[in-house]
Image (cartoon, rainbow over all chains, first blue to last red):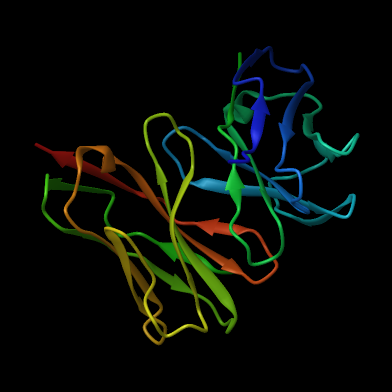
Length: 113
Length: 113
């Protein structure tokens, strides 16, 4: 069964450093999402991406964040200058169309020290 | 903005028993979807069940069923014949057609032998 994959599974970085989280959505899916979950809290939407551009973003997704689909398979989330409060689990999700089930990847646990 | 409320932070049920998790939401939209996601200790997000708002019939997936009350904006999840593997965090989520998922804070379910 096709699945969303994410790398790395765990990333430790120092405050102020840039990180890139990678996702490979399911191959025929067209809509891509990033969510984050701070430990013990709910899952929060960051950004959605369709047709090579951002279609929606939350207030969390400020100028330090960016997304890109550099080739036909990868979907990346970049955090330019990490802060302690960026420590969280970051989930990528994809769906074939609006209203369809969003398939989640296993997540990348980001720890900022 | 839509809000999703899960009023039970923790619940416990004995194996083979039935348990119901509550969820209410607030929206002025007419076309939307509702979901229940399961998050086991691995933190993977797993879709349990989905409901389209335009469908009056309650969704069912094996031991999992929902009680969707559109007028009351209520969407509860019933788990029958609970199994130890059902122990997890359960998140209710709302999705306006074409937009991202909006999650509740979750209910931690413990299934005991």
